[in-house]
Length: 311
Length: 287
Ligand SMILES: Nc1ncnc2c1ncn2[C@@H]1O[C@H](COP(=O)(O)OP(=O)(O)O)[C@@H](O)[C@H]1O
Ligand SMILES: [Mg+2]
Image (tube, rainbow over all chains, first blue to last red; front, side):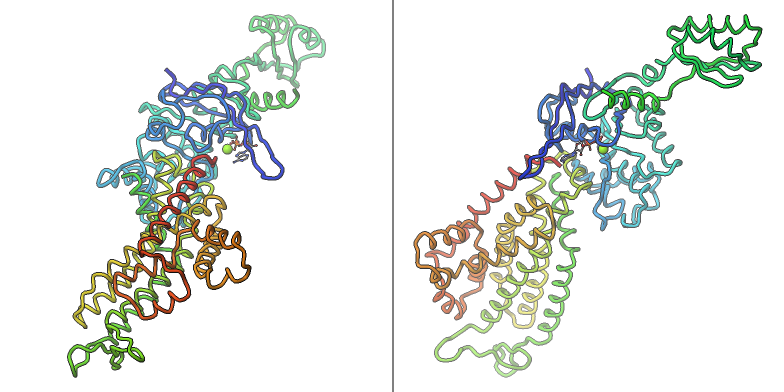
């Protein structure tokens, strides 16, 4: 049974008293997240990623559709008991210290006494803020706040962790640290739901991704599924390809690009690449190397968004 | 128990607000002054003296008072109205602070119902304010106990009544805070209602005269009873200490209810309805 399961989740925000304004933030979103995976929800700003997570945690109420987490209907306290959440642009009461912040949110999870203190301290250490526990958080940098936020989200040892743009404002080293931390958590069995508009971040770590644009799911699949659909190859030659050779190849392939000694061909079928190689050899040209070009998720994402806009 | 976390956090937040720190400083100065100024007359061993002057047991012609009670009443009345006034300033922003973008998501994602969040926040705000009053009241109480030999429990207890009054009034502050989500508006509107309620209390001898119309009068009555009756309740909280000759002056201006408990009953009903509205509103909002 999936840990998160939504069916046709729809959210229409209504605002304005005089002139009613309606924004369809989610349209029939059906997503299932399996226990133990890292699931990335990708989309440009305004796609509805934040809204989706907020609905799961009952911060926002859906207009239509259904969702279950841990088999519980939306709104059940148990969902929030077993979830961790790092909101985007989170803000903590600035008069608290890092340690006090963790203690506060731990208390809201029902922890107290030495269990609470030990948990708060060990998490501070885990996120690399060990020496900052007694410092007021108004003195924290953006990256430190982000790490504190992550610690806060882990106070209850959540079964599922929702992270909304977790690497926002974090430097590259910090990003890597966060990524490693998430991998450790997954190894311990925590399910991770990651919202991001930064595709390279998600690509590196997610088991599966869904691409969301204007409230609609465009595609769901594994990173491999999504990235290996292009059948593009880069061929290195030992001499410059003649115009004649190019003319021979062109009818066989979807696309032919390249310059001088490099050809980039996109084929319809994997076997076509052999035919291309044969043609090159017939010209007396030597193939020095050939490798499949993986379109990064980013390219794919940009394509999808653009084709979506074209509709 | 989870609500306890929110409750304690709110007390801390309330106490750290600037206005309450001001209150704390003023209270400390007043306590220090009276610790020095109050004593029992060395001549008869029982008359109360402030800065060397004996407080007489009669006021003008024929009005007799108990000097200790009279002085304690003045302390209670002034500190109660002072604390409610500054308390609103101090904590009207607490509900909007909880609802700030980036913060509200954190609180709402924890396993507490929105009802518990709101009520523990309101109780915490009240407690934060009342702890300040306690500080003053206990200080004065100790001075009277130690230097005058009067351990007046009613004086202490009346603070708990003031706490109840503040909590009942906070229903309005909470509702306004939820709707406006702005600390500034929250303070402003809470004050307007506080002042309006104070004004309407004297409606029979003032506002009624503006327009001699039954509908107008009943409308004023309805508005008055729609809100918790802070002024009446505070006055009645002082009954735990005693009565003041000034009460008779006041009763010439207002219709006193037949029982001192009635304003509490009316206010309890009003606050319950307002809290219920606030909870309903909070429970349906997207954040
Ligand atoms: N509280 C709200 N009221 C009205 N519109 C909103 C609200 N929150 C989000 N929106 C709108 O809903 C859409 C989706 O927003 P969001 O879920 O924040 O997307 P993302 O997280 O992918 O950037 C946007 O158009 C945004 O302006
Ligand atoms: Mg977002």
